[in-house]
Length: 336
Ligand code: AHN
Ligand code: ZN
Image (cartoon, rainbow, N blue to C red; front, top):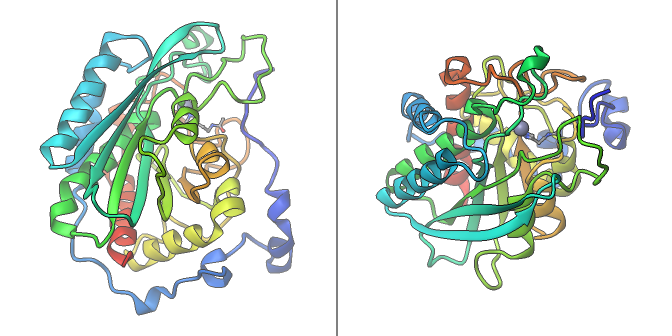
């Protein structure tokens, strides 16, 4: 049986309210920091999903960005240069980590700051590495083939690059740190005989959370973008996000409503994801929400292309990129 660190159980811990309501929790309506969508106006700044799609393709043109590969090095250079071209200040963290397989590998986090001089900051983040093993592919002959990671990697970075391009137009009142985490997806494949409680995933964010790029670093909250370009994606409430950052969930889903994107952001519970937001919440203490698709409980919870060789640019939807990008723009426009 394949190991899956995804909990396939319904969100039992969150069930009290859900049972009463008969369906998912609705923190946007009832949470402590609930925001009334009707009282806020939609930003006039438009997220350009064609531009974001071009950023997805550009990353994939390097090939799968697996650790310790030339594609990984060159794509990291590309991402850093692109953020700099939009006037952001780029800091890199380069360290060495040990993978589940005992390999010592270079780990490179790339942080791009919009207005680094401001004390009030918001984080937008995503992982930029590709999984070296397509171990959820329907064809077992592909299980040791790298994932192209158009959705599971490039999509989050692409949305961040497009947001960075729009910063001079949006002019948010807060500073924004775009963090590209390395080695999220180096978790042990099912054939590895190890039980590391899931600590073999999210290596870059574990490192950053224990060693932020600036002394005494603080942020109001974080938004993690994971697989934000899949066709048919619906972004439901992720369990750890509700547990650690319920008010931020309310803020984001209300912003989605203001932006007219509620079809992509239904007020429903999803599942728990062992993702980069976990160390950000638990170790760095920054309330951070995971925007991650929910395609129902089970093996294909994150969508049909997850950890398969079909995670390619042809399967990216500009409608999904736009829904997420416009929603995050809306959130940033509302921070005062
Ligand atoms: C699981 O919870 C199995 N995965 C969420 C982290 C992840 C892997 N995101 C992308 N790939
Ligand atoms: Zn993955």
